[in-house]
Image (cartoon, rainbow, N blue to C red; front, side, top):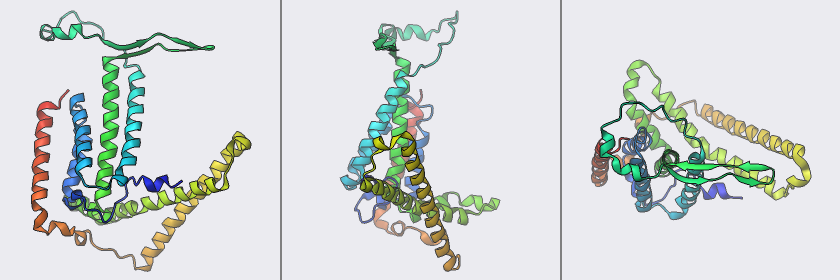
Length: 304
């Protein structure tokens, strides 16, 4: 029942020699923005390229395999299931044909030989019910590919950043990026503290949920014998206990902060130490150059 500890999603891993740890957290934040924003209005080739790039970064990151392989495996399964279901969904009604034919049609004459339907399964009669027909055409296949790749890039890029970036470094980088908002009177210091507390609080939530799952497993509750109503009561009591424990943890954290006088370090005092070390300047420069190159590729080859 310790599968939550075996899949450290969103938890910073200390003591690893991964080169991603020594990268400027601001650059990592911009890289994640690139993985989140560039798939918008992008073609399938660009989305698949982002997935391959993320896998390549993961394999050469020098992170311990036990840290990322389970989460990556389950994420691939989830993306594949969602993509397959998206292929089976109807893609909408085609627009009405127009009388004027595009001159590009003559240049794309090779597309005429490509069948529009990729898979067509007639209705299947299973007992009194009928399933089907199942039709997968080029548009639905493209929709499934875009959906699965988007889920993978969004989840895995953020997970990589959280695995290799401490909450303090992440808070400092976001505070540095949005520093101009200080002139508008926005309290960035308080917002940064709330972000840091939220990042520190996530492992506590996972730990509480893991403890409740372990308590149910130890008691060997047989939900088949309990029935639907009793099983629902058990789940509601577990959810109530989970919420009470989370609120208790939050109250303890607030009491600890008040006991220290409500004081905290300024975000500027949390500047990562590796930014001062010149040994990693070449790594940051190379990462920045590669980011600019990828954005240029997106502008030239990533359109629909």
